[in-house]
Length: 151
Image (cartoon, rainbow, N blue to C red; front, side, top):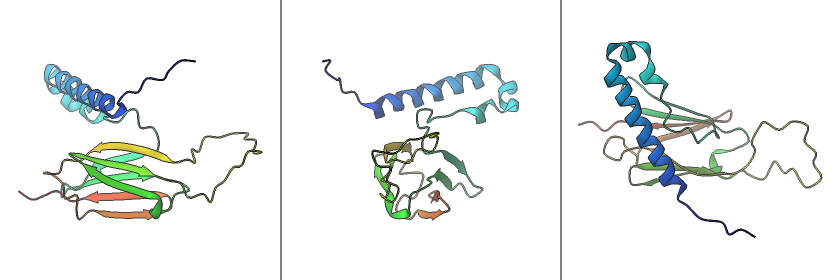
């Protein structure tokens, strides 16, 4: 029996994010106005390994940062939001209202109804107000709004 080796997945993801930032900046710098005008800068994905839950991440005119997570089957009490250094740690535990049991046969299963293990999202403490953020949940959509700190 092979012994499992432990590794720090978060460290790996952080490395990928840093590499993606570096590559994107290099492409934009070397390609000049073509890259700026083509929208390449908007195509970068800093969280390619987090395919679940689906995420919208954007800013508003007032520089607030908005996270929207698609969480079908979850309720607000299932959600855990913690902060560590410059990261928001997101996780969720599915209420056991959806129990499949051992005798269930699935014909098609595209909807992932299971717990969401902790995921790290970059949210710098000196840029966004992490103490007074708003959190709302409606129709399976969790919306987190972080106001920018005025300087």
